[in-house]
Image (tube, rainbow, N blue to C red; front, side, top):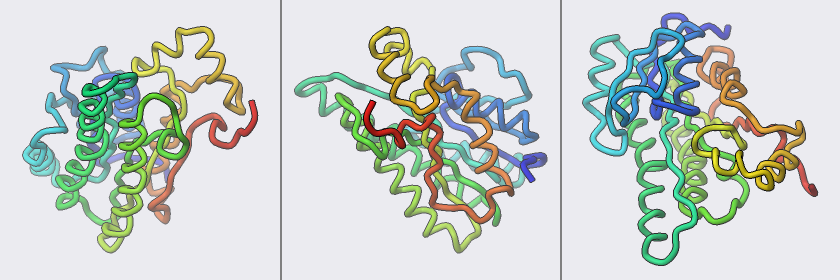
Length: 242
């Protein structure tokens, strides 16, 4: 039920962090994975066979997706994991960062969905990686919050639009996961403890904590689930007073 053997998957933002882990994890579950990222190559080698393409998903991406579909016959799984965070800017830089956040974290995933849809057969799955910041307010990063909140609702809208084609669209919403993006707060003793204490499980997440949820959403095990937010946050959004 959870096997991805024979499935063709595209994972964006896969040179490092969450995207890298998801690409490697889907390959371990049997999928043929095409990893896409701006970097010329992944930061470290994948542990499982993964095809890597250097491309910017915030630019023209349709030809890349068409090429994957032509080579493999179809696209069964799309994971939109590419993302940036640009906190702390002031004045004019704040507006520029806001617009850049929307472009990479919201517009680019929509472009990838549009590029993938013509090549996706019934039973296919789109997974948009959002954030707990799509549901609760986080400080000093309005562009990220707006983009991830928009991606959450885009997921629901596309679930409605693509459902008649048998394509499922869900959101995978991580909490505080130890990656390069969160390295600053992870290494700060005060911030680290604040985030740890806000979870029910009493620890930060790792990229490996996301793999089971991603495989579930990509596989036939979730064949009647669409438009859903699957939170992998250690209970962050469930917890009230800390």
